Length: 131
Image 1 (cartoon, rainbow, N blue to C red):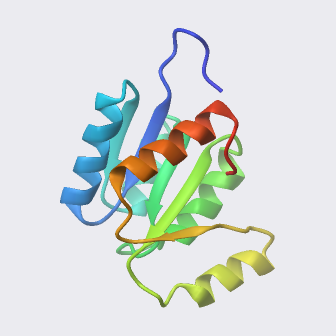
Image 2 (image 1 turned 90 degrees about the vertical axis):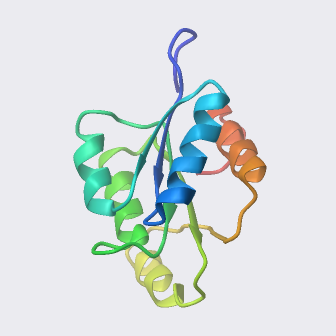
């Protein structure tokens, strides 16, 4: 959790630049620090220097998928609240594999209204939502 003078940090990971950049702008306008990247690999490099309080991750990413990224973040940054979303229905196998490994993630269906994501992240950062 962030202190009174520290802004919450939100990481947005989506291969679709317009989605990632738009969500970043929404979180910036809401008074949070926000960074957008377009692959899991870029996210892994970024969080070495800039650790987020919350991450919004598209499941379908080039290279490493979003579920594997979420597992990586949960292992290395357990306090980071995670929200996954996908426009594809073929994520069930990856979710089942993650669950077998002890990780359970809710996946929101795209399109997700930006106000709904903002509300969800705000709740997670306040401690009222689930990670």
